[in-house]
Length: 338
Image: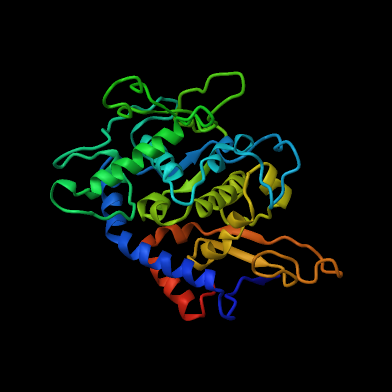
């Protein structure tokens, strides 16, 4: 087995566009990430880890049908985390931030109260202050759309998605009101919608409860804002697999488990390349595989073996925006390859 190394061949046009776009986006977001992280830090004590129940990311029973990387399970047959994945939405990030904020002030076994308005004035904090998204002011005068207006629309869209009947990760107690429909939203259990049963309120996991840990640095250092949904899903998949082992342990993930139980396709699987470039995941690749996981000479005697992964907790202790910018510039210098 060999450590993953950047492929020094020239990247494709798609690789170049993705890296250049992401570089520009993170440069724009850097001050927003710092501001959102500072606001979150004010909300209470930092927990040692963030605990998440496994059913947020993992189905106990395999998804029905005959799914594959080309045809993933229907969204209703995926676990909640991958049911709400979106290349442009913030539902996954918002839910994870809400879990973290809840664990900052509520005790294990208790239902957390929603203490924040969606939008606040002065020195107070609202939910839109805890989110970093690359938005800009457009227009002027009476037609000007402020950054806070745009952030609020993104948060409302995310809450609407999280409250959807096929998701049920939040409850909107004021949905029937003419105004303030999304104020006072309440977290629901990570398992979300339940077949032939009501969703249940979220309760902070007890110490002896079955739950996996996410590093506090994911939130403390801004990674929650700069990682893409597929990368967050990959991190949670590894954390879920590692929750009964030492943090330094290595794991392998079979393709059928990844697809049928975690609901992750090849694009999410290939997120390990960027995560390795960011210093968050250690990857050992079989020399018979390409870096995207495909087997060399498959069908002509090439043997399919699995990558081995280790989650690097210390990596989450680094400042996210600066680390990602450095990694993206390095990838560009290497010919748009990780």
